[in-house]
Amino acid sequence: MAADELAPIIVKKVVKGGHGHHGGAWKVAYADFVTAMMAFFLLLWLLNATTEDQKQGISEYFSPSTVSSTTGGAGGLLGGAAVSSPGAMTSRTAQPSVSLDLKPTSGAQDGDADVEGGGKAEDEETDKLANLSDEKLEEELAAREEEQFEKAAAEIQQAIDEAPELKELKKHLVIDQTPEGLRIQIVDQEGKPMFPSGSSRMHDRTKKLLAKITEVVQKLPNKVSISGHTDATPFRGSRKGFGNWELSTNRALASRRVLIENGLKLSRISHVTGKAATEPMIKEDPKNARNRRISIVLLREAGQKAEAIKSAKAGATVKPAEAEANPTFQRDWSGPRLK
Image 1 (cartoon, rainbow, N blue to C red):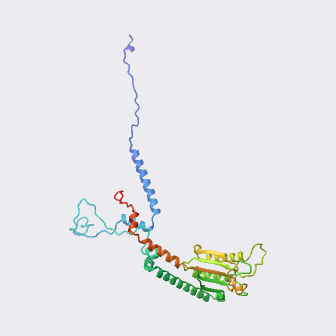
Image 2: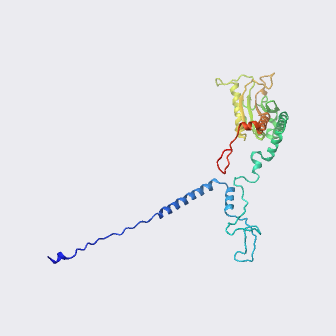
Image 3: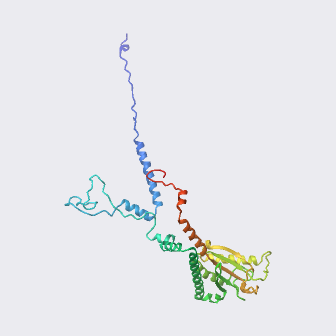
């Protein structure tokens, strides 16, 4: 047998080393990253959704500054500083307590309650009116509204007197009280109209007069109605089908636009109408120039206010029988339950 056949056969196995198992540590790090990002975006949302007062309250909550400065002991590293009241026995394992005066986080500032909703004075006045009988309540509200109307009429007259360019227009102004409300009329004079003949484009002097009227009217809460009137002279124009009805309506609408442009809220306008020559001021002379006019009426609201107070007063008292017939379920936040 040959020598090479008797030699041992040696087989070498090369095992390549792998990287091994890394474990799940990366998952923990990723979860921490996602949590941090969620907290970051939540912080951004809170900063955008809160008011300055709320931010101030949160800041003071996490940065307490009103801690007790009571000292005790005989010096040392902290000088015997304590956060508890003098002589109080506290547990060594208990967390020190801090008393803070935080500002309200509702966004309201001191005194806001007296502004929003009319304030305390208005609430007291409403309570006072609610204690009156129905008849006395209506009389009191009607008397107050009458006084407001008289004051408004005097202010309009004064505003006209104080404006040199409008003094000559005082004779064009007629103010009186009607069952409907305080009526302010701008009337034409013979030879001096407020609108050009057959047109709804008012003269500049008419606009200035309406601007002064608006200054006073917008101070009151009453709704406003506007109506246009013409005389009985038939309309002569080139437009077919256009007559005094259309002309009076267009003039009323033009007056409404001027009132709005000078600050009167659109929600205050109750209605705008054109009445042509159906309600002449000078009944014995339907073609008189004074029949051409714009009528602005501050509508009475005393009756509506009285009814509102009566309804509120009636709804505030609930009879025991009604309460038993309509039981209410309450929820206690210590746990959901029915009572």
